[in-house]
Amino acid sequence: MEKYKLKIIEIIKETENIHSFKIEKPSNFNFFPGQFCWLNTESEDVNFTPMAIASGILENELKFTVRVWGDTTKALFNLKEGDILTVSEPQGTGIPLNILSTKKVIGIAGGTGITPIRSLIFSRTDKSLTEVAYGAKESTDLLYKNELSKLSINSYLTTEKEEPGFHNGLVTDLLSKIVPANENSFYFIVGPNPMITAVLSKLYELKVPTSHIFLSVEKFVNRDVFGPVFPLEELVNLRQFLVNLLPE
Image 1 (tube, helix red, strand yellow):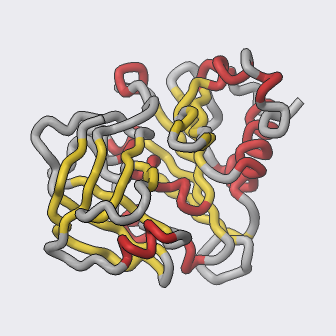
Image 2 (tube, helix red, strand yellow; image 1 turned 180 degrees about the horizontal axis):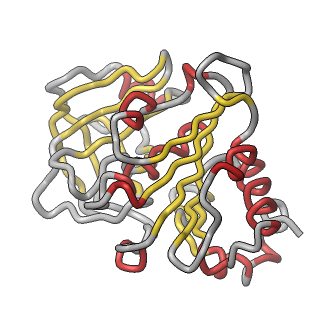
């Protein structure tokens, strides 16, 4: 696995415990939205941690949005602009952009699941072909909300806590606001398993074909990663391994 030593250009404080790291992008760093990298400090004194790529392929820098939760992420939070990050080459399966090139894509996200959807948005030359339904417990947990408001996309934001300026409820409550699926629309779902299950149940009710649905499903076994992006049709064929995720 190839590794890069890359300078941190900017650190953005998204929330108290979530920071975005904008770093150098090597000329040979090719990826698809939905893929991830293993991150570490320059010294590699702690274990590598997997992190979804938040930047789009059309951007000049790489971006990773990190929630602090363990030794490695705590070490990353101690870094400053100008320091070096160790970044692996892109890993895992991503979203096939060739299939989606002229299609409407509806990104549905919960919490930090917005990260690969941001990558998708900034990988498309026509950003108006993307709509976003995004939810979190409260507005301070919603990432990139100011950025999303400035783009030529329809973004629907919801919070479990009732707050002015935001829809109150769950992500599934937003689906009725989104243009119904047709042969030119696809869905990309990223978030905690209960959210994925609820969204899939709703999409099944709406008769959305499984061939139009992509999921980001991460399963970490030691240092191996299952996924993260799969067409739903493939996962349905593996239902016996995913009974706790997919609805009946």
